Length: 397
Image (tube, rainbow, N blue to C red; front, side, top):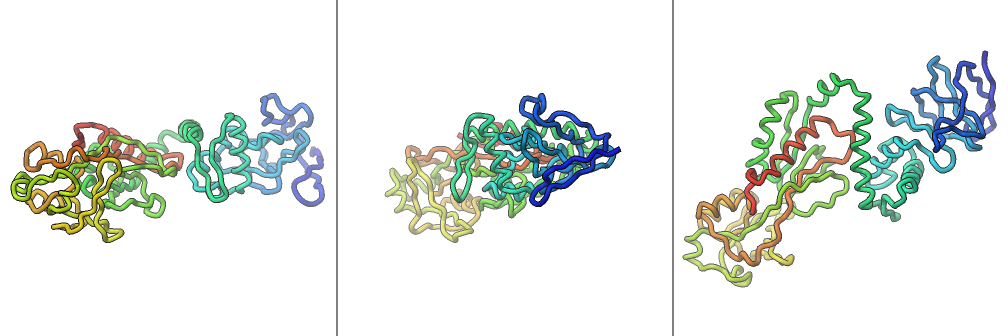
């Protein structure tokens, strides 16, 4: 036995839909109060969903297509099936159920625009905009700053995004077979980028135990003093010194790194000890070349002041080679804590201009905001955060 019912499935004439009598009828399953729609009945969809731009089409347990129609006087005209759990639309004010709204919101938080988020999800920008608007109404405050060119997540949006990602990971884990997770997520490549000297000195030490305990993980380490592009370079995890404001990334500041102008005691005896930056400019100095520009990096001092050696006695694009030049007594140089401190403690180097020292920079471990995060990436990320957060691991002030 079949039941005929007329429904508007998009543009064009109304169509008569034939539905099996076995299809479960009842109140709207997505009304906000959870009690269903009191005005119009609808077809309750099964868990398996098909995407249909002109009708929310579902497959019931018998393999029959059903369409959710005319609920609360409105028509459902899109289906969203980006996740294992199909999203059910509510009438007028709430377009998506709360779980799917959070999925869309998290994608928007990780993208430069709602259009980019829509492309990633395989839906329209209007769907993303409406979902974010509904979520903002639900939480009672704006989640994004918007203009005609870009979006920028608010502080409230950041807090919600962190909680939402964790919640979505927990929900997704309910549907993942434990054996499947352990077999696949702890196998594969984890690509890491770090400043060259810091990476050479510490990454293998930091990750040795993880590598031995999980031989299925391949550590792919890329050392460079240039800031890597996470997307283009397919970076999973990175280390970075300095300011960090990239909203596409999750970052943890593990420690602070100071900078010192240093020289050997023999250099001080030979050319004198500078009392200010003007005197420093008249003394032999080193320069570290920025490979992207071909020019020497400036030295940083308190209150944002910078110093550019006008006639350096030694130039190189490698921090460790610069340090060797300083240790040989050729010139004064500015070194970070993790290079300078061991030699300051041994007496091979002395620090000068300490009252001009800049505020320490943060050392950040970062990864993409994209979720869910594979277990192997989370494992390596947590190991790096723990290692660099240990004050005894990396020499600091």
